Image (cartoon, rainbow, N blue to C red; front, side, top):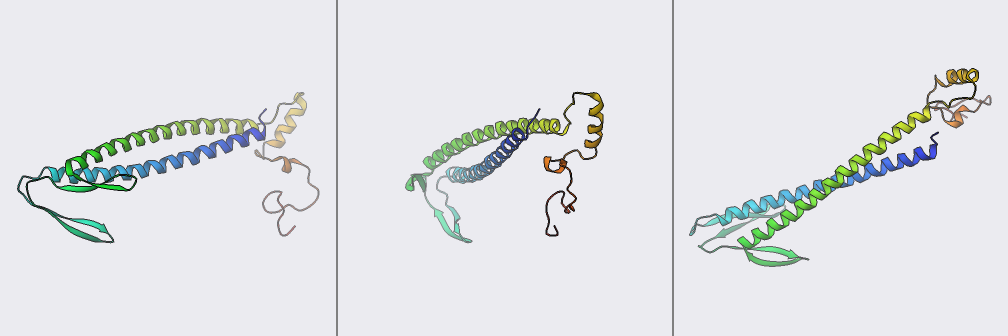
Length: 190
């Protein structure tokens, strides 16, 4: 026989797994945004590196709030860019070095995303199993317990058929008091 405590534990496990799955999916979305940003950076650096020698490159760099600064690179030499080297330390590096750093970061972030996706898949599988087990046990709990004698089993089955999910408080005999609008709960009128 299935007890209510076991069913409650399974319900809590299902809820915990759902929350974890939501958190993992949120992290995946955040990682996807960072990957998209790195892809744009790589495309810009690739364009800068592939310009013809002696040609001028000019663009506008956004600094936020709809404001951008003009940027112009003249000459045959490779330009430089400031790059975050870690822990808030920035360094000036040639575009090719910056592109290498960006591509390595992108690969690392992709690896992180793959790990998060794996965790998401595992959590989703665990959630499905826990939910299925919960549903099976809930169905077993709804079914009436078999009695020792067949003569007494049929009247109790007939009584429990109209109301399939009665709680133990609702199965106790009425005491002559008027029931509230929401089952056996007390209301302000009581």
